[in-house]
Length: 92
Image 1 (spheres, helix red, strand yellow):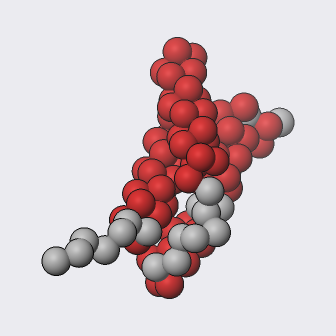
Image 2 (cartoon, helix red, strand yellow):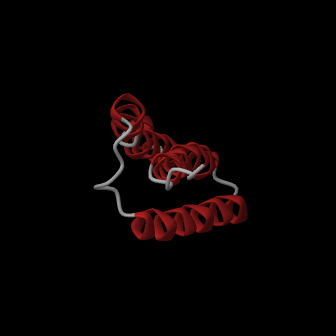
């Protein structure tokens, strides 16, 4: 059963979970509204992603590495945009 290859299953799972962040990124970029996004949730989530990347390095799994590096970029983008869009306007 070649289709049950663990690396293939991991790649499909990683692709699916990583792509779940794309609609959030698009919505944030389109509407510039991040008020409903929890920054503490994203900080904890990013920490977990970094640990997944370390784990992927330790076990030499490209599926885990690629999926989590892309997820890290997308989630960090959402968090960065949240801080950017919600900063206080500078008084002159």
